[in-house]
Image 1: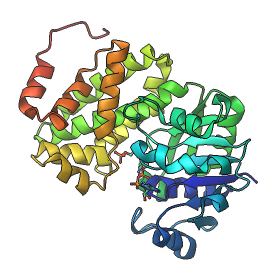
Image 2 (image 1 turned 30 degrees about the vertical axis):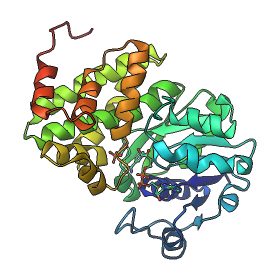
Image 3 (image 1 turned 90 degrees about the vertical axis):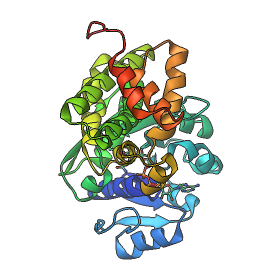
Image 4 (image 1 turned 90 degrees about the horizontal axis):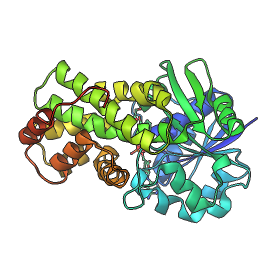
Length: 333
Ligand SMILES: NC(=O)C1=CN([C@@H]2O[C@H](COP(=O)(O)OP(=O)(O)OC[C@H]3O[C@@H](n4cnc5c(N)ncnc54)[C@H](O)[C@@H]3O)[C@@H](O)[C@H]2O)C=CC1
Ligand SMILES: O=C(CO)COP(=O)(O)O
């Protein structure tokens, strides 16, 4: 039986542990909060992250990283993107040398502009062949309720992606594999920025034409940056690209969408962050992506607009007007 460790007992880490358990894997969840860990272990619930949902039997939970990581074949990580480097720094010697490492996170690190799998690879000294990511239209609460969902397991080594896929597949969770790590991972991070902008437009009272425009042109700029970074074009019309954009931009469960919506209605950034519990990755990732795009010489007007509105205090109306009145061009450019 595959043995998996999941680091991070928030909404997605706890849900992914449930996915692994339901697929028949032997899973241990590590969290820093003793109360959450005890509740998962003793009551099969995590009220703070997944209120009202029952977890499957068979999830071990611990606050001891050594216990979680011992003999793991798969090590999955789900903590906030900008904190992951510090959180996992002391755990490298505990990660088994043959384990497949899987990022469940959707962000780009500030300063380094690294994708999350790159951060894990660097901090733990894990080679590319053992690095994978999970990304797709995967709102945690829907999956924890066992609603049918598909996802993408990406990595350059087919044996590694297949191990993660086989260890997570169940009657309600369908993993597809993809060798395009860059495209899948960039899509997951970037859609959070687009979801913030859709939320802002919603909050300002705009309707579905605006939403569809932002999602579609958002996908165009994700694709432009992805291609510049070496991604495959097909990835962006798949589950990790268009699929996750649809889920995150449409759902009230999305924290990025909810945060944008609060800002669109006039909330201050800090209040909007606090009201969504702090893990709206699009806030900081918008800055990383803007810098990354500048390095690559890629035009990212929606990302620029999000940075201007939420970080530079630019008036929302003026920024949106400027976005629409940019010089006209052919759609495919
Ligand atoms: N919630 C969702 O539906 C999905 C989330 N993700 C991604 O997964 C990542 C994690 O998100 P969630 O689990 O939803 O966030 P969350 O806010 O529910 O959980 C984050 C967890 O990290 C822990 N944490 C924070 N700082 C820590 C520290 N210094 N040491 C130890 N633990 C620490 C928190 O205690 C919390 O348990 C994000 O990158 C998110 O974009 C990806 C797919 C779905
Ligand atoms: O990544 C997600 C769904 O795929 C979750 O989105 P939020 O982080 O915006 O809640």
